Length: 309
Image (cartoon, rainbow, N blue to C red; front, side, top):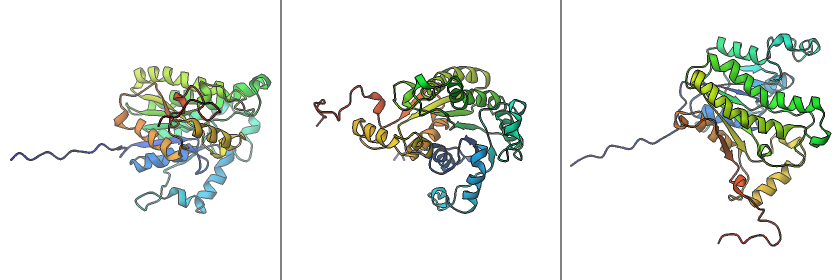
């Protein structure tokens, strides 16, 4: 009698990998969910936080305010190997205005630029995975026609060029086969009234840059670069725009899967894309939006097409 060989189940395995998630300042956004998913898959996770939010973030961690969110399925608690300061609008310290360097939230942090982050990460043993969960638009509530040049360029700098800079500075010091992930939004492709200030342009640039960076970083160092276009989610940053609840309601009523996305779904997708299971995927925009991007007409309006039985 021939004994069947037991099947080995596929699973996301990031054991021994080091990950850096840039843009974590609380436990409610996609960055935190991705950090937790990477840790669940076995990675050692560090985060980088905007200096004005760094002190509050560390205090909340120390006081146990995030303990419920940090709880892992096996009963352990997620802990970060390192928490780095990062202002992603600056590539090197000598380009930072003196008044900002001397600000009380910055002056004792050392080199908080992208170059400084890359040097610190390298000194601490390097990283295999980099997650860009960074976005900021100072005039996001303004229509594009009312957006200033300064506000527009600031949105592109913080939300798109920062990804280029991260790949440029960290790519050369990462082991071959590294993975970069960023977070996009459907405003890169469609008009979202109210999502202004150049942020839609920044997301479009981010997706375009993903393709170019995938080519250049792939040929130079063997790294992969992808972006996740997530559906609307009521993170702290998104809630500041002011209409996120309406967007969630609208997309939920019109998506093929009529339910809101969860941060955990985005985290799991990121963990997959950073794993060997996704070794053939690069230069892609991966949608995690319950299929909303596939729809060409709203189905919740009067006289809409019949829903399938």
